[in-house]
Image (cartoon, rainbow, N blue to C red):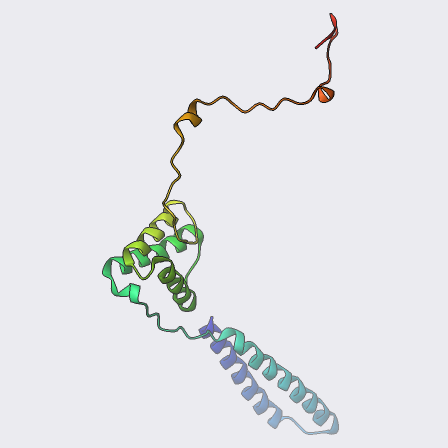
Length: 173
């Protein structure tokens, strides 16, 4: 995008130079000076617009991503796999600042343990999530009699019971 923008800016400047050469060769009159002044005002507006657009076209420079977890070879491989997964599955391309903050968050979750961090990444990918989080693997043991217990039935007081009507036999309860 930046290269295309620079080429457009170059073409506009070439056009300006050629227009100025043409204006020098034209006969000068009062009306000509008036038109030249109008063209100069418009040209200044074009230049201002170009300068304003430049801030949106010029990309922000990446920062270097450093993290203790990346010193571990198996984590580095898993981290690359995670970034590829995000791009493939969710269309997310992780830029340097987002990557740095994600690694910081992962360091907190994993207590700087690369194996825990790998587990969290794998867990998130297995669930097809686009975010990772700390996994709590403690489960509550199931009560053995909960399987065999009868369903809970709540009996309402009599005033809430409505009589059932059978059209053929009359009232029954």
